[in-house]
Structure formats: structure tokens, C-alpha cells
Image (cartoon, rainbow, N blue to C red; front, top):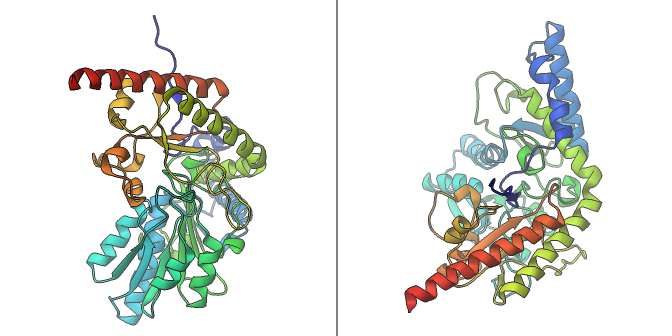
Length: 409
């Protein structure tokens, strides 16, 4: 008897490419396969035009200028280019190694990693705390913390817009105002927010912003970095050199099919965002209610589902749910649920057996953090998927609890 299909609820890790995106990309693999840098013939010109049109579209959807968009291999590269690019240029020009950097304990490892590398090379790094697990705003960063951390040597602040584990949305516009008053550059990892929330760089006030195609129903291997070109101009030290593409800011032959896919995926997300947000929030709430009813003691990790910020916007991504089950191991539970694809802890750090650094930063103890499951709901999920998830988690938890009680007995 064939096994039932696996329900995919791990859309914070990656998303299925929308068939409409695939359709837009296909000609650039087999028919219009030219190198966008080869302007001497029609194949290259067609590719160059496709990249230009995609750059225009991506810029428009975040209220940027086309020249402010650098295409990369994904958000990890974008984060490295932004963080290391700012600091290394400052160090090269001013011959200073003691630059002060500010970020948050709950950032993604692709932000924390380059920051730590710079700290090892002489920079001073401050990582800020967030609201604790007991708060309705768990994971939220108080802008006053940023203000208090800045000093004359501070050159860069990096704060993500929406957290990849607990879905909390940070007050970037308030943080930007604080940074700009002090002449400090603000970088934002918006990987989980672009395509899911309205993102306008002029409203947010960020100087640099990273995002990736595969988080918004586009292809893997392509992303972008917004780099402010006015009031003030932000200049970066290139991290990949050799060909001089993209005004020398990021060398390498451009991934034309991927760039077309990124632009198409972002356009679809923007068009469908309003209805999709309402639908995903309803599915997420159905999942939360079902787990509580079936399992009783379930702790919500991150902000309360109905908490709003000062602008009356919800403080949590509509498709995010992270729960701690208390007396079961999250990794063991994943193995017990063969028909459900979810994450325990941060997917990009799944080779690290320790508990989630994000949940630990909320003040949760290690055992409770290890019992967590992260659900990422997306475009292709349905009510029946949610019902399967409720049944699967309930059965898995009860099985592990029964096994644990027998061992204890």
C-alpha cells in the first residue's frame, strides 16, 4: 500500500517554485540562453534586456531605483556583501579596524557569521537582547536598545525585518531614524518579509536590504541586495571581483533565468499578498487552535498571534507558527511524523545539534527549546494539510510521551 503524500509545512526554509515562475524562466534556459554581458549579438542583447526589465520590476516592487539593485546568489551572499562590504571599505579608506557593529542575538546565522568574522579581525560587536518568551511581544527589539548601543565608532547596525523562526516583525522605520540621526548605516535582512509583507525601502528607511528568490516561490540560487544610492550614498567593498559586472559591485555572469524567476515571483507575491495574508493567518490560527485542543500544554514561541505594533500592523508573519511541546524532543518527533515536513529549530543550522539560538535568546531553557516545532505555511497549503498536521503532531507527541512514561516506569 503506498504511503500518503507528505504535507509540506516548511516554507520558511524554502518554497515550491510557482509554475507561473517556471514558465517565465524556461525560455532563458533553452532558447534565449545568451550571456547578458555579450552585447555584440542578439542572444546577448535579449538576455541583457531580460535582466534590465527584471531589475526594473524588482526595484519597483520595493520602491527602489533600478541602479540600487545588485543581483546575487541569494540572501547569504547579500548579507555578506552588505556587512563585510560596508566595514571593509571603511577600514580600507580610513585605516581603522576598531569599527563598532550592532546587531541582535536572534539574527540569522548568515548575518551573525560575517559579524563574528569581523569581530575576530578587530571590530567590536554588540548583540542586543529582545523581549523575553513571557512577553506578548516575544522576540521584538525595542528601538531604544539600538539608541543606547550606538557610539561614535558605530558604522553599521544590522536588524532583520521578520524572523525566520518565530516570525516577529521588527520596527525598522523607528530603528532607521535612530541610525540616521547618528550617521550610522542600517542593513536589513528582509529574506522572510519580502513577498509576504508590504516592503518599501523609503518607508523603512534602510540603507541596505537583502532578500532571496527561493523564499517567495522563486528559484534557488538567486537573490538581491538593495544598496541606497542617495541621501546618503552607500558604497561597498566588492566581495566577488574579476569581471566588473553590476558596476563592479558583484562580478560574475548574471543568472538570467534566475533573475527573471525572482522578478516574476516577487510580482506574483505583491499581486496576491492581501488575500494570501488573510488566508495564511486563518490556516495558522486553525493549526494553533487544533494543537492546543488536542495536546493541552503547548507553548507559543514568539509574539502572540493578535499582537500589533504601534502602526496597528500584526507583529507576526501570517504564515508562521512556532510551538514548544515541553516533554518531547523535537528531533525525535520529526522522525515520528513521516508524513509531515516541518522544522525543529532553524533549518539553516540543522547540522547543529544544539537548541535554537533564537529560542535561547528569548530566555527559554534548553530542554523546552529542543521540544519546539516551526511551521511555515505557504501558498500551496490547504485546510486539509492543516488537519493532517494536527493529527500527525498529536499522534507523534502521544507516542513519544507514552514511550517516555514506560521508560520512566
